[in-house]
Length: 123
Image 1 (cartoon, rainbow, N blue to C red):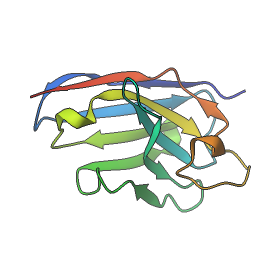
Image 2: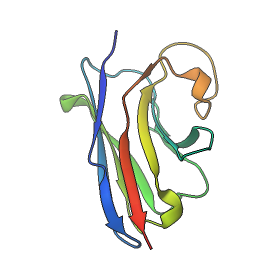
Image 3: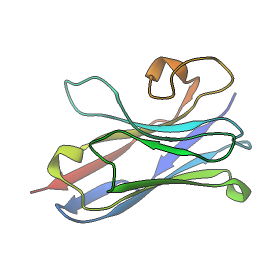
């Protein structure tokens, strides 16, 4: 079992920045994704980085503002969030996809999930 722990969430004003971290208990060799869930809404894809080649992917609403990266030596994936907007407010989760087939933007494709970290952006 892979344990994932998110950190770095908090309260920021619109236009501010946060960097989220996703620390894994073991080496993360598969695609790692960031998802977010606002109250009353479905959990939605934010970004992912592939396990082979470290290729990043983003949902359109965060493209140009968020950057996903990986530090293999630290078993950690980061999500740098700049120019934050109130609509970015949500609980952010990281997850590892594993070897199962499935679209990297689908929550059902991921095997292990962290507990989430709250991001609140005030207007």
